[in-house]
Image (tube, rainbow, N blue to C red):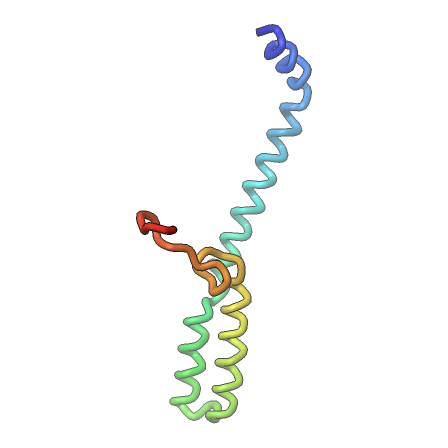
Length: 97
């Protein structure tokens, strides 16, 4: 019990710094989330390309190039996330050998 008390007394001066770090991390996470909400998603941008092609604003070659770029961006943004091609994991409850 004295070890816990001793550690608490020694760590008390660091509490404001830890609280400030916690707030900074949460603000950064919130800013990142807000930024992702403002950025149009890849599927939305793909639909824009399709609409521009249908309206005659771009030709088929330009549309294909834009679609390739957007799909490459989608693939790189999903890399390393669960469900990505290199990290597919079975759904919970499935039997795995």
